[in-house]
Image 1 (cartoon, rainbow, N blue to C red):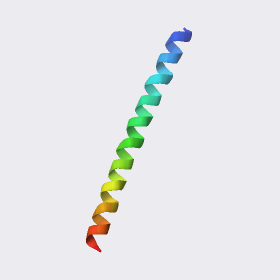
Image 2 (cartoon, helix red, strand yellow):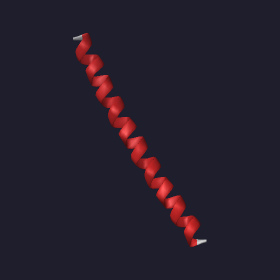
Image 3 (spheres, rainbow, N blue to C red):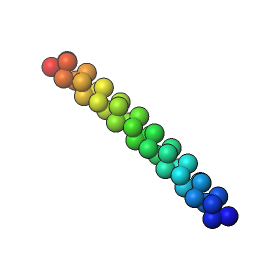
Length: 38
């Protein structure tokens, strides 16, 4: 049971990390586009 909860926590953390990375890359792209526009 404890192992299962650890497994769930790890999966949720990975999902959150992927989300953060995706958002960060999108923001980076947007910033670059804005800089090019100027």
